[in-house]
Length: 217
Image (cartoon, rainbow, N blue to C red; front, side, top):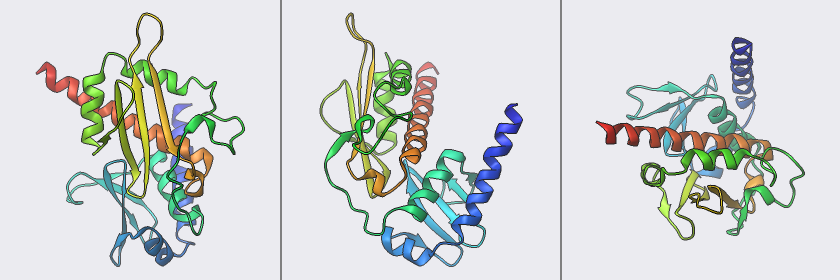
C-alpha cells in the first residue's frame, strides 16, 4: 500500500513538471525576480536553494551551490510549482498578519480551527524550545514578539510567515500558532498552504533533531 502511495506522488510530480513547462518562464522570472540562466530557474524556499530545469521541469535542492543536489519531495515541488504557475498576476502582500486557521475565504480543510494539525506539532516541540530556537535561526528566522519562541520565517524571500510557540504548563497544553499574510492565497491555492507549512515544520523538526544529536555527543 505504501509503495502505491509513493508511486502516485511520483506520478503527480512528473505530471506537474510537464504542466510547468506550459507556462511562461520569463513572466515567472520578472514577477519574482528569479535568478536564472539558460538551463535553470533558481528559487529559495524555507532556507534552501532550489533549481528548476527549464527543459524538463524537474526540481532539485542543494546545500553546496549545486555541487551535490537532492530531488525535491512532493510538498516542496507542489508548493514551488503552484507559486510560479498559479499565483495571481499582481500578487502583493497585504502586510496584515492573520491566523492561518481563520483565513476569511476558507471553509473547512486541514487548517481550520478545530484541526489537530497544529496541536500535534505543538506537542512535538514541547520541552524543546532551545532546539526550536536554533532551528528557526538555522532557517534564517528573525526573532519577533509573543510566545516562548516566536520567529518570522520566509517560505519564499517574498512571502514570510510567523511561528509562535508556547510550552505546556499546569493549565494549558503546548500551543503552536502560524500567522500568514492576509493575501497568501494570492500566491498559492489554499491546499498548497498546507503543503508549504508541513514542509516548514518538517524542516524545523529535522533541525531540532540535529541540535539534540549534537548536544548528546
